Image (cartoon, rainbow over all chains, first blue to last red; front, side, top):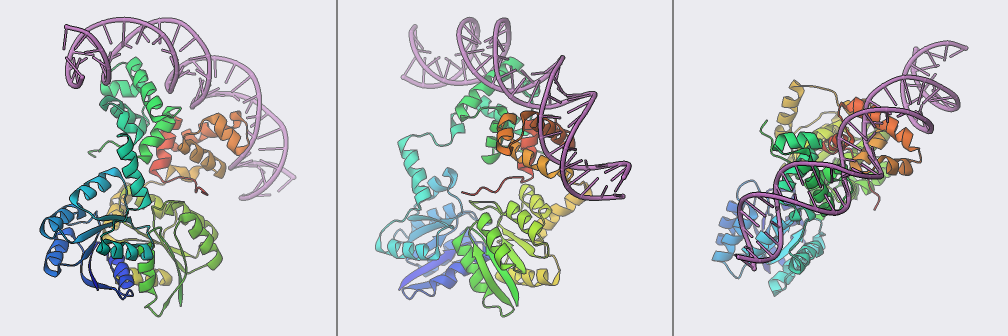
Length: 213
Length: 213
DNA sequence: TTTTCCATCAGACCTTAGACGGAGAAAAAA
DNA sequence: TTTTTTCTCCGTCTAAGGTCTGATGGAAAA
């Protein structure tokens, strides 16, 4: 029997996973938790073989919980099960000691399989996540806007608000010619043709200014 | 029996919800889908009473899918079930015709209850979301893009993709002059100054095209 | 120190966008 | 039927956007 603990603040996800895992004879769910801090408690009490861990939770995130679990129970395998596969989530999680990394788009079978493999000592990485890792290993340049300078990023956020070059210049206290230079550089770095596409890019990649309304 | 379709690109969430719903005697899951586009197909085929819809999905987002479903089956109740409750998700979803709005932090019982209430004609709104709505109603204003004609909405979505007037003309098989006319009308109706602001508007209000991958 | 990168600005040049006015045809509403 | 709406298109004009080349001073890295 492989002893499993499930940590996720989404009630449905937790129930769904548990319901499925219990149909598997080799698996036994010995605990569940709805936050990172509670998860650590239960894991330390139950000492399971495998932990299914969500990353983003309301109280105590999964990365901290993973780090804590690994420092106490190094033979426990933590499998990350989350919706996100952006760099800000993946790399800290792996660095915290996660053993496998799955996405919630995975099928129930895949998750079950990953648990068994983790128990046997095999890591399972979601292809999309693996892809991230590879590109990161190859060239340390991920998203196009990582190449942007700080100033260019400011200008891009202004474009994302729909400002004209003149308005951008007024806001940043620089001339319109300078703004044009920045815009040109931004467009070529992002590999887009005009400011509208740049604005779309900004919105698709969550590049907003934090408003203090 | 209340006929339900579940649309969510997270396999576990979908399975979890379905597993739970099937323990309820009054409910019958008549379909499931892992993307917005597939969801629309299945809903149109099955004509369920209630649809549980995730918002952020890989192929075809839930907002467009909801809009499409409501335009075809206006008596079908779409319940949004998502992780997010920021303005950019909530308002477009409600405006697209969502009947209820739940978060994935809701318990299985709450979701089940919401389905039954939706079937009976009662809307259920998560308190956090309801709070957002209240603050918005105080400064109640109709969405400017309600005034747009169908054609103008198409053009606006093209702008939101970053297309030029020429490219829009090519895609819609109309002349660039016509496109310019539409754009001018759109800009004045949305009360913005240029296409970039229009693109920003489109993205803030979830006006995207459903891609058929 | 030398080199590289960044932010700033300039002028010339061309393309695109957008405003304005006008107009015909088809469809829907009155 | 008449009226209104919508979609289509034209020409002209001005402003804005964008490219290219080039230049300066400063800061950081080599």
